[in-house]
Length: 99
Length: 103
Length: 287
Image 1 (cartoon, each protein chain N blue to C red):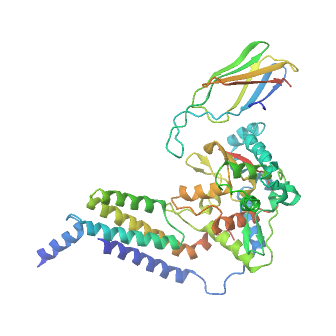
Image 2 (cartoon, rainbow over the protein chains, first blue to last red; image 1 turned 120 degrees about the vertical axis):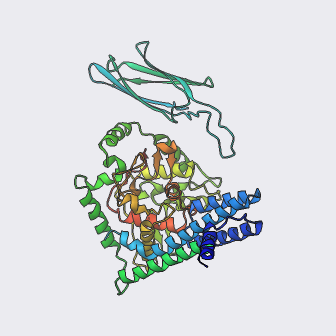
Image 3 (cartoon, chains in turn yellow, brown, purple; image 1 turned 45 degrees about the horizontal axis):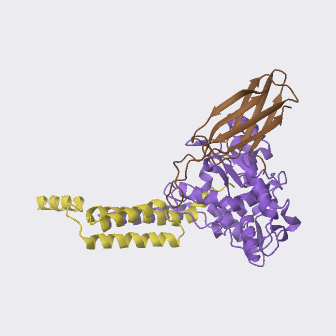
């Protein structure tokens, strides 16, 4: 039982040890794009999100789906961080203000 | 057309201090424009300051000098009221010159 | 893996929000008080740099560093912005296709008025900057607008700034809730962290004036608009306020807005107002 749990844990940690498919890439890219769009509505996108998305698309177009998925996930993390920045700064900015 | 060279020279007895501002694109030939094409090299190759018929400062420039270069130097000699001549030649063969009275 | 990362993100958000709930004092929202803000703003910088006179702040990094100051004083005898000012003057008086000139669009023919910009237009309900006013002048006279980040706009604003040299910045905030809101939004923009590098304008210009970022000496926020537009050696030419706002954003890895978007006009309004009374030093020369 314990060995199985350990094996499952290792497999989960390994994550994308198995080759990604085009469908995986398209899903990851769509998620990243959606998050970046939301960041855009908050008027707080990062330049690195855009360049990482572009890198994902480039890899995807070339058929390197492992690389494309990795880049898309990175882009989504960056986009989500920019959303977090925008929402938290709505109140945090006052702490920087000279009073 | 107005000169591309603005020059001012002041003498304090022994030394004459000279400043000049020259209007020139000084394109190195390594920069690309927005279309991705190289902007051809266009820069001053020689700059000469002359006093009393003799050169007091000569510069051999290349594309590494920035746009609209500013030069400042000092030379021993020079008298108030005398003329200082400045001239340049660029890689396209164009030239310009100007004079200033030493103040 | 993806779900784990999302979970971490959301977890952090929840934690941060919870922390904020304890940190923020309960109570009514603060009243917008530009007069008090400006007083506090000036006091902060005067206290931080007691050896400087108020008018020194408009020279940015040159008042922060002795070596830079010496070089600048020498260069001011033959300033690099001369060509742009002359070009601007020529453009200002050259007729449009319909025979009119920029002089017809501005009070006093555009001479000595730069210190009144930006202003709040109560009919339109928005902040009007000098750059915006210039392009509106062009469009009203059948000409295509200029790019806000290129040489022509830079030359025009350089000329107008030059005619106002020495005049005190004189920005007005009418007693109109929309004007106060625009001012406040400008202030919020100034202090808000953005970009992957997580910098606010204040990170450099309030927390670190006089210190270096890479090789550049940072300017204080007080008086920073008074020197605009600026001939930057880095740009090998004159650049507009719009250009500076856009490049500052991308330098901290934030996607810039469009020149003259609300945020930019409002922050220009805020920064100019809190520097009221300090002399116009534009156009400036900067490294």
